[in-house]
Length: 514
Ligand SMILES: [Zn+2]
Image (cartoon, rainbow, N blue to C red):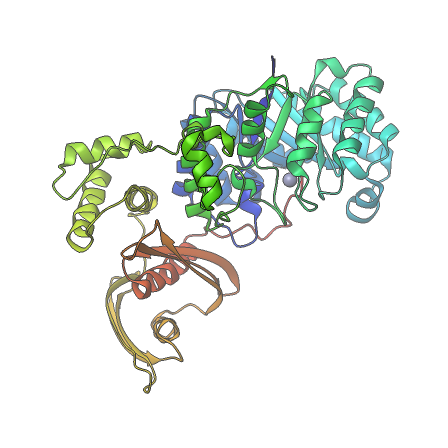
């Protein structure tokens, strides 16, 4: 079977999803999990876009050893120099340069003639090759480019030293048949194409990203790009877990394999969904909550008699484990630590102590602490930035009745360590809390979006809230989980505000759209 490399861009293209902004520790936790998932290449960010992104990419490159870490750069020397500083400590430093090749992008965005674009691409790639052993070049908006111009520029950038040529469907416009033909055309007409790896990068605007990626593989792509849960710009990218499972299940049709460890899919999906706040719909292929739930009577009967009647993917294949190790009220620290390790968390002694305390507190309130609860506790502890001063919720009380206006009283500590208290009202309990927090916080805060969900099922499930705010006109997202909905709401709001205090925001410069 032929091997297809997996290029994950959850931390770059995925992080560009509207409303997503991950902090350094969250990115690092996702990177470590992507390494366990067995991706060949991970794109950790866009180092020149902000100091925060630079630091995150650098830390990931220096931490991850099992795969190649790459970063995005425009075709500018300055971007390439900054990316080298971030990536040089990696196990296999790799750069991803992009430049648009479609008439619409060259004319309106770049304001360059086609020959000027060729020149800029060649110059950037040869400059990058002086530093990086691997350089990927992307023809942004390849699918709407003139095929003969593509052939011409690809030949030139391969001569300049590009080791990977990526043909992205930047705007999610192509169809499987058309995309396959593009790969055929490039393979047939670019004389030095065998010196480079051909890569596919698809967006899901017409719901065809996964189908287009599979078509590309059948027509000569040996690298496939995408994200976990298909998150990304606009309608998102191709979902890597869907491609990997499709190749596995339909081996009779596709003679290709990846290095992805399918059993790590569920955990990776859960982690990305929690940290980004991009919820996975219940009916999502491969990782949706209902993907394995056979609820209709006829189906259930069939599945009980013989699982393959309706179930083409087994839950175990993607890491949904039915024989979970149970951990209860009386479990000690050792058992707790083991459990954390099975989830893939490597905790320091301090973090282990904190997580264990949260677990013990929860067992006092909740009859059954589930794997989902533990996973939430561990992610929260592992990604909490303890060193930086922040707003912290000390105590709060809400009065709600169907006749009186809801009132919230809140006690906070500010980043300077001062305790402040205030009360205010709102039309509902959450609004009362948010109005009060707004009074207590110096920053100018506006709520843009609020989402409430439960962690796991059952009457005593933990509540999880994701919010999007603008804080002093900058976008910020936050999350909070607690046994009570109101406490989770307050925590999510403060989490978003705290992120903006330390430049965790998205870069203000124009976003890269590969
Ligand atoms: Zn993209």
